[in-house]
Length: 135
Image 1 (cartoon, rainbow, N blue to C red):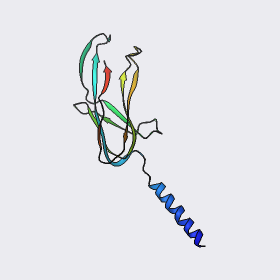
Image 2: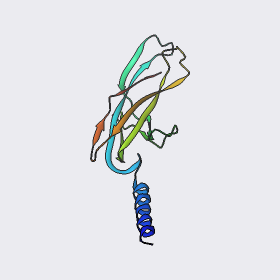
Image 3: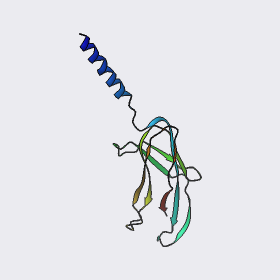
Image 4: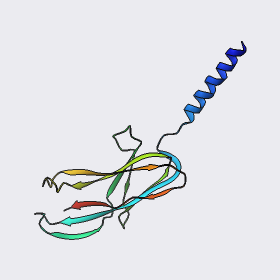
């Protein structure tokens, strides 16, 4: 009887600890921030018309490594900056889209990704600029 009680307590404790394990996502004290820098081409993609930090451009975040769909998004501010707040420890993929200039398929958008690992608390991670092409 005493052995059953000890096993039950150990099982309950193990399950309780496993249930408390938090995955990547919201509910923490960390921040990921960065900017999106655009190079604007003419219609023929032969001349650069401007380069600037782009406002109102969508940036996405994926929590963890098990998911392929985005969990949240953010439109850049007037300075081209984005910020994802209140994140827990874990792995995050931040991405946005750019016109495909490699294959010269200017109608196609391709994702540009950066992956980051948060390991502590109260971290502010500043990612390198996303460099995108627009028309």
